Structure formats: C-alpha cells, structure tokens
Length: 107
Image 1 (cartoon, rainbow, N blue to C red):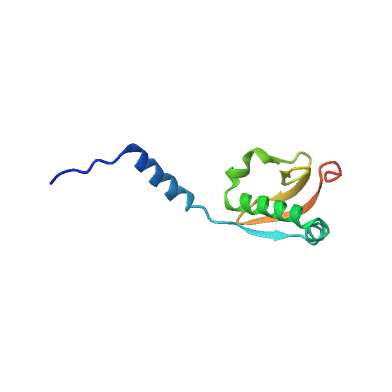
Image 2 (cartoon, rainbow, N blue to C red; image 1 turned 30 degrees about the vertical axis):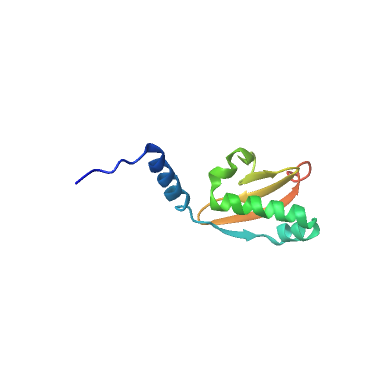
C-alpha cells in the first residue's frame, strides 16, 4: 500500500485549528456600577469595551499585553484605550467590578 505524503504545514494548520477550538468562554458577571458606566458611554465605546472583555473571557492569552495584576488590592485591570476595566479572574466566572477612565479608576 503506498504511503501518502503529508506536508509539515498541513500538520501545523490542523494542530492550530484543534487548539483554537479547545477554549471555553468563561461566564461574565458585571456589578451594578459597571453596568451603569457602560450604559452612560457612547455605543461604540461600550461595544469596544465589551468586545475586549469577551475576548479575554474566551482566551486570556489574547489580551496578555493589556492585562496586569493590581497592586494594593485584589484583581486585574484590562486596558482598553483610555478606559480601564477592573476584574477578578478566579475560577469559572469573570467578575467585572468597575469601568472608568485611566486617571480616576484607581481611587
């Protein structure tokens, strides 16, 4: 029986596709203050912030350069332009505590 030649690039593409579907999205919960801020923002800003939060919930490594752990308090911050999202990523739920401008969110 003749053997079939498989190119190295075909194997890596198959492997990447298999890994990409292995992620499961975490459930996202928003506090009342975070929802209040999102409702007051322009629609395009709200859409951008929610897209970044959902991208982090889907695959945390995709937002690795925009996420840092906070000093002096628990949680992490997600940078979205001039906006900051304070979150907690413990367990299966991504809790969004607060959303605000970069200057006043840490007070």
